[in-house]
Picture 1 (cartoon, rainbow, N blue to C red):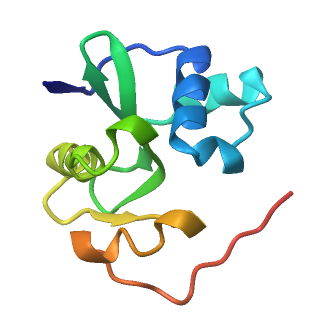
Picture 2: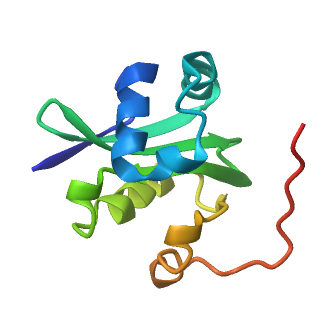
Picture 3: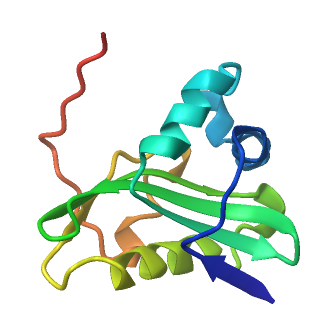
Length: 131
C-alpha cells in the first residue's frame, strides 16, 4: 500500500536516488547535492509517496496556494510506474491548493503524452530563460 505524505523530511540523497530511479535524473542536476538541497528547502509544497520506508514518488511544487502552482517535478520510480502513483501525487497536490488554483508544468519529453489523459491542456506559449 502506497502512503502519501506532505510533511516527510527527505534528504537530497534520497531525492537524487529517486530521480535517478525515475529517469527524471536525466534532466535534473543530480550531480549537485547543494542544488538539490536548495530545491527541497525552497519548494513550498512537496508530496511524497512511500512503499513502507522506500521513497517511490515525489511531486515538488512552488506555489502561492491561490492562483498558481508550478509543479516543478513529478517523479515516480520506474518499478512503480503505471500504478496510478503519479496521478495520485497530482491529486494530493490539488487537495492542498485553493479551489481556483491552477497547476502549471513543463512536461519531460518522455512524459509529454501523460498529462493530457489527466485533464491537463497543452499550452503553446511556455518559455524558459536559463542563466
